[in-house]
Length: 139
Length: 136
Image: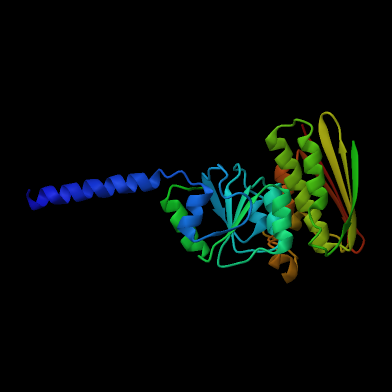
């Protein structure tokens, strides 16, 4: 087999791998694995599919979203993060930059049947990994 | 159906509890999802405004078969220039309010966007009254 043929096979395999990565169905267990995330509220095995995500530390921005139920990625860790998610019909909240959920946040998230996670990754890295695996931006 | 709540200025841990209650009530009425979201987002923005800016306030929500009328009366500094306050990005919020993720000058414009009608009356040094209507 010539060098060109081997290169063609490698390129085809890379394309196939890229395609597979881009059609991942993003669920909580895969998200946890990709982001070294820790579940702090909700069911890791729930079958909710994450199609869209929005990253912001500004809750005023979150309240302007028209999209239906994106994953919220934020570094803002206070009870109004969860209140805002409740009002915006967001069911999954991911605290980035190593921020920790308070007991008050966890209680409110639990009341609203939300999934809440923590990742040590930055918002930029988190967003990049999720985008690479097929999670779409809200706009 | 009428709901009335007292809102305490500065108490961010309680901010949104009234909006949360009304959201639960609206979900029982088999309304369209987008209508409920417009109501609760506008109401929550207004509730947070009272917590952020006023000493105290009252929220009254009247739910009729064809609409909801929400009136929020506060005792606070009032709004000197309502046109400026309606401009996206205009804000007089404190650093503490900004630390909570608000105070970007988007509250009143977002209420207007979500409401079918918004009426604001304000007297400097006395308080502000918002009437927000969303039709079902």
